[in-house]
Length: 173
Image (cartoon, rainbow, N blue to C red):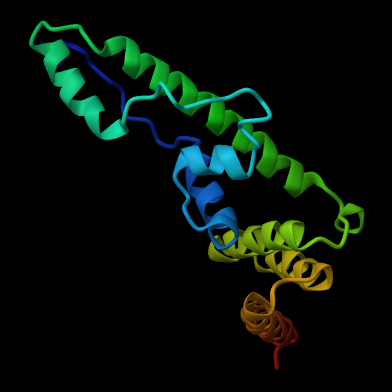
């Protein structure tokens, strides 16, 4: 039955769950989408609730039932997917807000410092070392917790060392 649907293979897709998990893992620990919604977006203050949500582990079984002719449970899957899309869209907006905020505009706040350090780690893993270095410096200036600050200083040193090697290489030394 499902073989009749020809689904095109996409070259790329946009998924903000992975960057969100990298950015906020140090700050909130659990990086399940519901926890990100709660702790990063303030889901409760937005009137968002996942109380009626189904466990995502149940979705394959519900889909299998649907393929076998039993449509019960699909409403819960659609509601779950709608909540996921809403949360991912809001996380995308939050990530883009952080990336578009000028470094000087952020207050000295451990919460914001952790966000900026998360952005630094995210950018560094994607080879954007100069940007990652700036975010790391700003995170340190804004006051990271001591254990994380030590880790950030080590990462900053690696960024600076990489830039120095790049500069020396460009000059031919």
